[in-house]
Image (cartoon, rainbow, N blue to C red):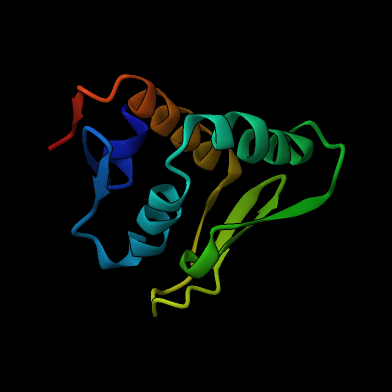
Length: 114
């Protein structure tokens, strides 16, 4: 199953959106991380520290969109200054979403789940 579809995330080129109010913090987190270099050099390495059990947890910021508090089992997106609700998802899903988003950014002419 396409991980973006599972979370009701729509991507048209580099524009990410969702009609699901519960997922707005996730959508804005992705929108903040919209540079390939930043994802490859910052976001993914920080995420992998937890996945590879180097760290028990890690927090990855996204300015006003909030923070991803990453633990081995679950990732909590919290603290949105935009008023979005907190959202929790399995860390494996969060990792897969980040990889899919990176793929979208590298192939910006594609359209996914719209």
